[in-house]
Image 1 (cartoon, helix red, strand yellow):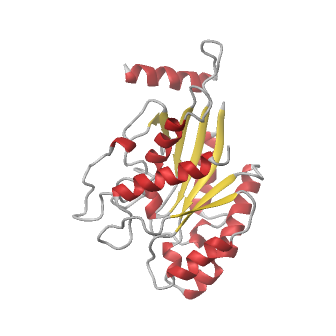
Image 2 (cartoon, rainbow, N blue to C red; image 1 turned 180 degrees about the vertical axis):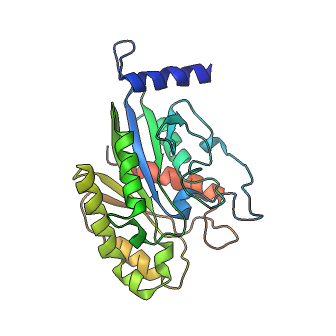
Length: 260
C-alpha cells in the first residue's frame, strides 16, 4: 500500500497534475558539506555500516531523495549513497530532519519533503568554491530538484572539519563561507535563500576553535547557526554517532521551522 501511494505521488510530481483539486507540493532541501553531513552514524568501526536505522530515520512515502541519476525516489539510509563517493556511509541528519518537519505539521497540507544529498567527505571549503566540481554538481542537483512544482526551501551546510588543519584556512573561513553563500544565491537566482550552517563539533586539526569562531562571524542575512558541539561523537573522535545525528536533524528542523 505504501509503495502504491509513493508511485501515485511521484506520478503527480512528474506530470505537475492536480489530484482532488489540489497539487502535491514538494519542499526540497540541499544537504551539503563534508562527512558529518554525508552521514557516518554507525559507520565508524570495522569498515562497514552497522545497518541500524532508528525510527526517526525510517522510510516514509512523504520523504523523497534526489538520486544520483536525478530521479525522485523514496528516501532511505544511507542518504548519500552514490553521492559521497569512496567512503563508508551511515546515518546523517537528513532523514531525522525530514521526519521532524512532518511531525511539526507546519508544512503545506500533503506536502512532500525532498532531500537533495550533495556532501562529500574530507573536503575543505575551497573545494566548494564557485566553478569547482562539487559546486557545479550541487547547483545542477538544485536545479533538477526545483523543476516542475518543486520549491528549494534551504541549504543545510555542515562543513569545516578539514579547514581546522591549517591556521591559514581557519582564518580565511568566514570570508570563504560568505563568498560561497553569495555565489550560490546569485547562481540559483535566489537572493534570500535560507542557509543553515552547523557549528562544528569536531575537527581534523588543532584549529577547531578558530573555525568555530569564523562560522559565528558570518553576518549575511538569512544565515542561521545550529551548534553541534556537545553532541555524542564516535570513537574516531571526528564523526557524530547515530543518536547525535538524530538530535542534529531535529535541531536543524527547529531552526528551519522558526523561519516560517
